[in-house]
Amino acid sequence: MSQEQSEQERIEGRAHLLPEETAVGSEDPEAQADAILTESDIREDSNLAPDTVLEQRTSDQTVTPAEPPD
Image 1 (tube, rainbow, N blue to C red):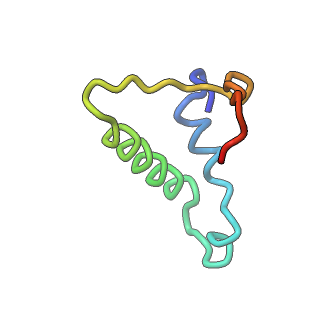
Image 2: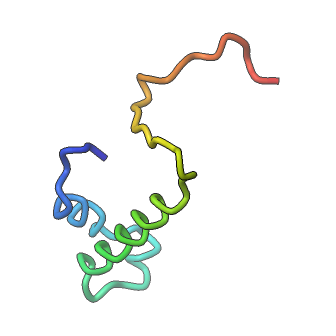
């Protein structure tokens, strides 16, 4: 998610139902998306240690390991 993305854009993007959600239907996909994103934000914020700084990185900012994993 881009830092410039508005809350409304997040909701609209999430309002497109997943296959499992389509199977059972949704009367209000935007309200459902808003609830899902709100819960996700709370969970994301509450899982951090007190002194943790959350960094958002893209895949091109990762480090290539020097050795393959065991």
